[in-house]
Image 1 (spheres, rainbow, N blue to C red):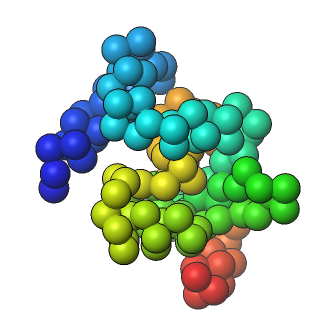
Image 2: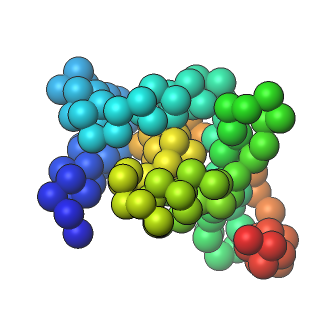
Amino acid sequence: MSASSLVAEAVWKAIESTGSVTDDQLSILHFLFGKNLERATRIVDQRGVKRVLGEPSGRSIFQVVGESRRKEEYFCFAEHYCACYSFFYDIVNRGEQLCCKHQLAARLASSLGACIEVKVSDEQLALLLSKL
């Protein structure tokens, strides 16, 4: 894991423990994520992050609204994967970013308790995941 990833993880844990973001934490996140942080905060502000929660297992995946006019929704795991083009282009292929704006929005909304919770059966969740 890179030093940037370790710093980001420490900041996320601090935010999760308090449920709020300090100015110092915001500065660090902005340094690490740049314009993707601004885009992610817009998504969170517009209530564009859903946590799809399977029951009874408690497993979950995020569904995050994009910023395009089409308002596409992307499934993502905040720390590991997003179905958007940017994830594959900027993160996987070029290694230029730690994560995409959708992952960042999911992590931010989760840390701040700002997700819309959608409960589905484990079977429905498995069906959603099979389409990724």
